Image (cartoon, rainbow, N blue to C red; front, top):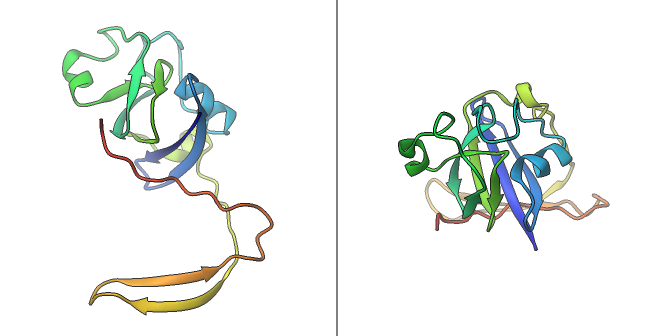
Amino acid sequence: MIHKVAFSFADGKTVFFDVRSGEILLDAALRSGVNIPLDCREGVCGTCQGRCESGSYTQDYVDEEALSPDDLAVRKILSCQTRVQSDASFYFAFDSSLCGAGGKRVLTGQVSGIRQVSETTAILDLDAGAHAGRLDFCRGSTPA
């Protein structure tokens, strides 16, 4: 099974990637070119710390020096010890430029329609048919 994951950073950038069933979150991020800062990979330093904003996960080992019980209660995680159980989103309190995640992927398309659905909301239809690959988006999920 593959889960969709979003990493959001303090500079407002968000990246999306897939995590394989049973895979460590940090390993999936590194495989996808997102080089989260790390020191130990053993759950004791806290360098790869983030917070789960939505989704289900387990953690293999977390030393109390890295994350306190209060930290765990507010869904803080160590990416080197986290295994996602569903689509999920995570927040990291550092800029994406620290982990090579600041790059942009630009696709071109043509606006094929605009529908005003409320006073403050419109639906924009885009034709990205010229894009050779499959467009992939991360679904939102709710905390378990």
